[in-house]
Length: 273
Length: 119
Image (cartoon, rainbow over all chains, first blue to last red; front, side, top):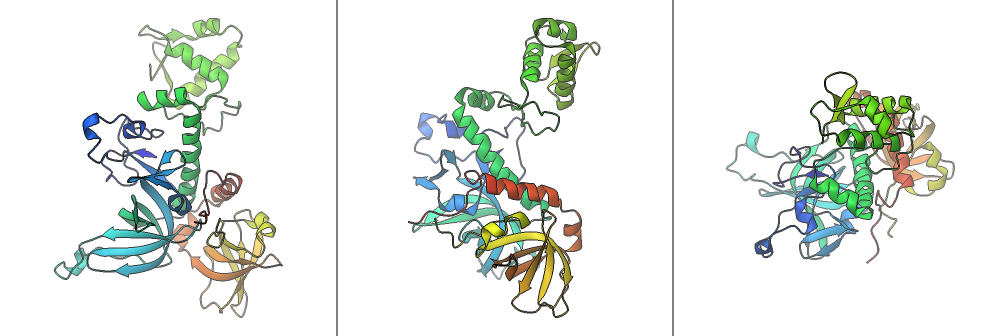
């Protein structure tokens, strides 16, 4: 998911400090009272499957897949049919998870527009990336796309599949750990996704660090001085942990960008303290 | 759940489980037979499956290819549709990562949602 403020940034447009994990401020009931009547803008975009969209529940004009809002979505699928009119391109997109999904794109393709400026319709049997809003019309779900483009390589398909799974897993973890979740939403985004090969220590923490790494990180974060905390003092604070383990944790945290060395290699500060 | 429209992405190890069902297999096309009536697809888990065409092929199927079809009782695929990707797309495709994704989709159906409940 990308924290997508305008709703029209398109794929990959993530705002600095936005938040990979965040479902967006709007989603947590943080809207002001005078906005209740006005339509609140969707803040985030969710990678999902066609099946997820078609089986989502609907309240007013928002759609939900379980507890997750999926009003603004991105998906990758195969174009099965194309219908062109001067004002609209209608597609049926299939990502193999369910029936074909109607995707509409509003365009200005009437005769007064020169041919080379017209929006070209995409071809059947090609894989495309769709970004848009879920809508329901007469009980039928469809997508009004603000972006629909052919994918450039098939790795994007693999990436989308993994993103769907990842968003779903991350969001359900967030719902089960409300404290950890809120900290991630309100604070700076840590991007601790835990997809690191060196982190094979079980990673019981949601943020992907092992217990030792997490303890070392906390010790370093809590330092108040400009020159940071020395490795020696970290070892003293974590008395039960062998020095080698502390140094290994420091090396990992440093390479991941959580901490940085200050006056010398023995002193560190945290990047997010 | 309407299973009719789901075409799960599978690899070779899942063929037996999906016998009789419509599936989607992404792999590398090799070796078209002389009549163009079948070809071999090397799956993402590095095994070979025979794809049987309903109409003879009129082009060489090589490189990255996606086959939509039904798994028959002999673990071959009766092809209903195929997409052949160009060389540039083939060359930089990470097939091992795709295989991991296939396995994850199968292991985590609550996170990769397929099927729409009957109304």
